[in-house]
Length: 203
Length: 204
Image (spheres, helix red, strand yellow):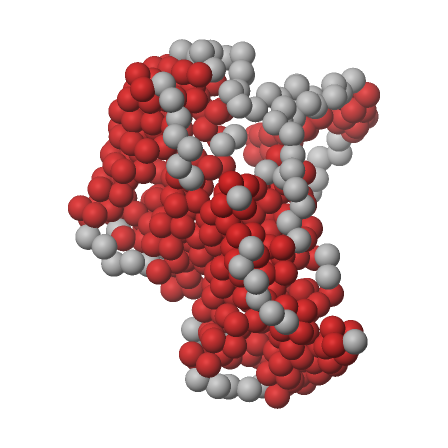
C-alpha cells in the first residue's frame, strides 16, 4: 500500500523544476561552429526524401522476411556500400542514372518484399549493395558546405541504420500469418511508390 | 519513505538539476574548472574522432576474448600516454587524415569479427594509442595546457572506456548480441569512409 505524500513533498519537485527553468543560463555549447548542426544535418538527410526512406525500410523488411543471416547481413552491407557511394560522390567520381537507380531500388526491393522472394544470400547482398551505392552517391553529392564532416557522417550513418532497424522491427510481424500478409502489402505499396519515383526520374 | 524510493527520487532530482542548470560549455580544449585531469577527460569525451576508434578497439578486443581485452585495457592507455608525450616534444600535428583510417580499419575489424591473435590485437592497441596520443599531445601543447596531467585524465577515461566495453562484449553470449556489436563496427567503418571522402573533398 502506498504511503500518501505530504503536501510539501508533492509541491517541492514542480517548484524546484520551475525555479531552475526560470533561472537557466543560456548554454553556449561548442564554440567550434557547425558541430551540433553537422550531426543534426547528417541525421536529417536520409529522412529528407521519401525515395530514400522507403528503400531503406524495405531493406529491413526484406531482411526480417529472409531471417538469419540476411537480417543482419543486409543492414551491414547497405551502409557500407552506401558510404562507398558517398565517398565517390564526395571525391567527384560520377555515377550515371543515380535518380533512376534510387527509384529502381524502391521498386525492386518492394517487389522482393511483396513476393517474399528468397534468392541465394549473395544475390540479395549484391542487389542491396548495388542500390546502396546509388543512395550513397546521391547523398555524397548533396552534402552541404560548412558542416563538421565527422559529425555529419556519424549522423548520416546512424539515421540510415535507424531506418533499417525500423524496417526490421516492423518486419517482426512476419511470424504471424496476418503479419506476413501485411508485410506483402507494405512491399506492394513500396513497389508502387518506386514506380512513381521512376516515372518522375525519367520525365 | 522506503530507502529505494528515496534513492530514486534523489537521483531524479539530481538529473533534473543537471538538465535544467546548464553552464556554458566550451569544447576544444575543454576547461572544466576542475583542473587539468578533468580537462583531459572532458577533451577526450568531447572528441568523437578519438572516442570512436578507442571504442571500436574495445569492441574488437572484447570480441576476441578476455586475454586480448586485458591486453588492450593496459596497452592502449599506456601507448596513448607515450604518444602524447612524443606529441608534446614534437609539437606539431600532422595533416595526414588519421581519423578516417582509424575508423575504417578498426570498424572494419569489428564488422568482420576478424579472428586475429591476441598479439596482433595488442599491436593494434599500441599503434592506435601512439598515433592518436601523439595528435592529442600536439594539440594540447598548442593550446598551452598542462600536458602530462591532461594526458593522465585521458588515460583514466581510456582505461574506463576499454574496461567497460570490452568486458561487456566478452560477456555477451547470445549470437544476436555479438551481431549487434558487428553492426556497430560497420557503422564506424562507414563513417570513416565518408570522412575520408570528406577530407579529400576539402583538399580538392
